[in-house]
Length: 102
Image (cartoon, rainbow, N blue to C red; front, side):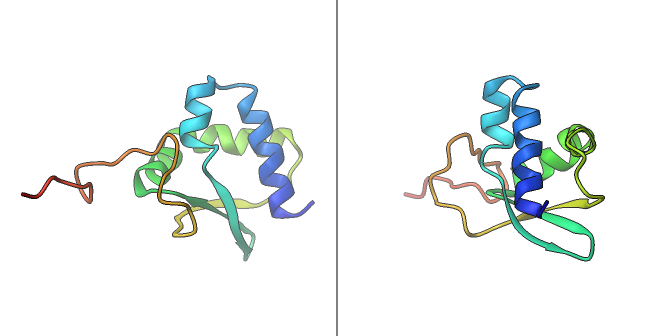
């Protein structure tokens, strides 16, 4: 099973156990962007999403990986610039967010 297959199975597992709005906000916009040195690198659309996944969902993600009998990989999240500028469920934080300029 390669990294993309693993991540698809993990997402399917998590989708069945989370509220749809939470899944759509935090996990649906992620994708595998690489695999190296025993790490599965997951691309996130924003720093906010990356930090949320690291601090709130990583234990659930690790459990889902175990449940789908994924190969032993560590998960690393990285903000990726390969995402479209309009992302459903993305949020801006004060730092780096846009402010109106007159």
